[in-house]
Image (cartoon, rainbow, N blue to C red; front, side, top):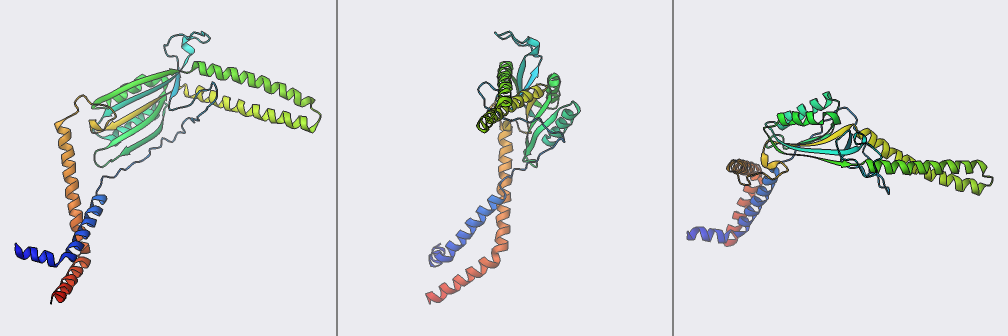
Length: 304
């Protein structure tokens, strides 16, 4: 034991050098073996409905919701539009535990296209191990219930499911009222333009006409967006092979099988890291061995 202590005390320099090299190799090996996230986009080949964001006094602020008509909701106080004609922004979310995330995602995309819908985006993370996926699709509003049933059949377990709706009829009416006022003002300024005689009058009237036209175009764009998206419902789908990876709180927070899976994954990761370190040491031995020998040689010379 004393010989070992004497050896270490006499060779502190290259001992520290070796420890430093080992530390760097461990750090590099762990970094190389850290689980990476692989993602891909599946294109449906169908252009999605544009979703601009608007910010006007009474306009509809476009978000990740779409509208559908014909939903059974209560009549508003104004009573200007019947129940059947009201516009409701509808959003559905569903979390599914599945056997194969990528295969299920492809099946969902195929079903969506066959039923007149389209995909907004799709991604799958960590596909080679514990896969997780997220899809956003738009489906004709009248086929929303059938689509949710199809998704349920594709799952081992439905972890969570919800649907929300927001009545945007009043916003649509407000936009239409503002549009009528702006168009009336535009018509008046066009009449004034016909009677303008001086350059200053013409320039001032043109400036007002351009401003009004810009506002009219913006509101028409909002109205067109709501008209087009009223035909579709939006569904956000979460897929995973592990229930704990889904965005919801499970009934049982501690599950032995989930702990076992995580322990096995961690063990595999550690073994891969150790193997990588051994490989790195083998490759860098052409540098480490000569350095160690050189340090020992110098230390012996100095000790003599």
